Image (cartoon, rainbow, N blue to C red; front, top):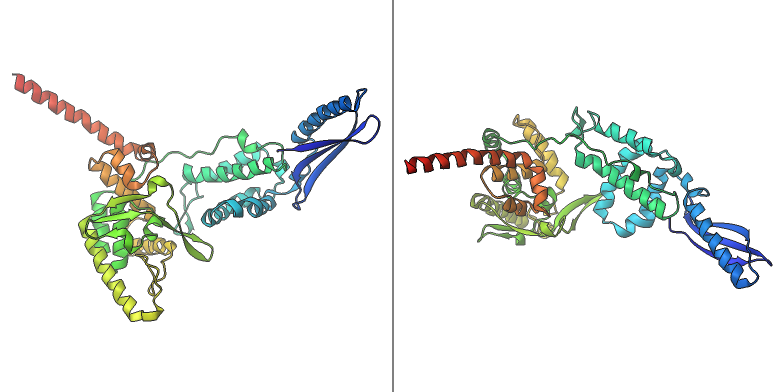
Length: 400
C-alpha cells in the first residue's frame, strides 16, 4: 500500500490527520481521518508533532488495522484489476491467457475476500493442482498431472493480482509471499524413436500438402505454434533454404492477431532442409491456384498457412487436426509443441552443440535448453567415456 497523508489544524491544540488509502470495492477512493492532540507552544512545533503522529497513523493503516477495501472477493478484484491495470498495460493475448488461467483459480478461491486469503488457502489450491486428473488431453480429463511450468502460472497470476491489491491499499500484505511456488515432479522429455518418426512421416504422405508442410516445417525448424502461423511468404527464402522468424500469430476471443515474438532471441533466421523447401514451393503453387479461383474474394493476408479463402488460419485448428490425425493413424497423441521437442531431441542426439540448438529454438538463454533437455545431454556426456577409453586404448597400442 502506498499511502499519502496531510495534516490540518482544527483547534488550539487539535489537528486533523487525513490519509488516502487506495480504493474500495466500488472503485471509490478511501480516506481515513483522525483528530489528535498535539503538544508544542508554537504552530510549527505542533505541526511537527502532528506529522509524527501522521506517520504512525499511516503505519497503523498499512498493517491492515483499518483496511476495509479487502472485503472485495478475489473474483471481483480480478475484474477490477483488468479494468484499471490489465487492459491498459497488457497485450490482448496475455489478457485472454489470464482469463483462461483464472477460471481454475476462481473455482476454488474466487469466493474468498481479499482480506481473508491466507497461506493455507493457497497451499490447498496448489495441492489440488498437483493431483492426478488435472491435466486434459484432446479436451478430456486424464490421469496425468500438470507440469511445474503450468502450476507456476497460477501462482504467478495470483501473486501479480495480490501485489496490486497491496499497492492499491486493498490488503496490507501479499499472502503469496508466504508460500513457495508449487512444484511438480520433473518429467524428462520423451525421446521419440526413429520408428515413431518413420510412422509419422509415412502417415503424413497421405495428407493434404498444407498439413504436410506445416508439420514438417514445425518439426525441422523447431518452431513454436504461434511462430509457425505468424509466417508470411516474405519470410521464406527459397534460394537459401532459410526461414526468418519475427512475429507470432496468437488467439484472443473472437479473432487472431499478430504480435512480436516471445523475446528478442526468438527473432531468428533458421535453416530448413531442402526437401521441406521443395514441399513449401508445391504448397505455394496450390495456394496461388486457389487465389486465382477466388479472384476478388481472396483475402490478401500474405500468410503461409491460411484457410480456403486466404484468411489467416486459426492456430487452434492445427491442434484439432493433429489430434484427429494421430487417432486416425493409431499414433500416440501429438501436439505442435511436441514437434518442437522432437526437433531438439534429434538435433542433440545427432551431436549438435547445445548453443546451436538453443539458437534454433529461439531460447533466450542456453541454460533454458540445458534444463529442458538435461537427460539427453547426460546421455551424450556418458558416451564421451567410451570415446576417451577407445582413444586411450589406441594410444597404448601405438606405444607398444
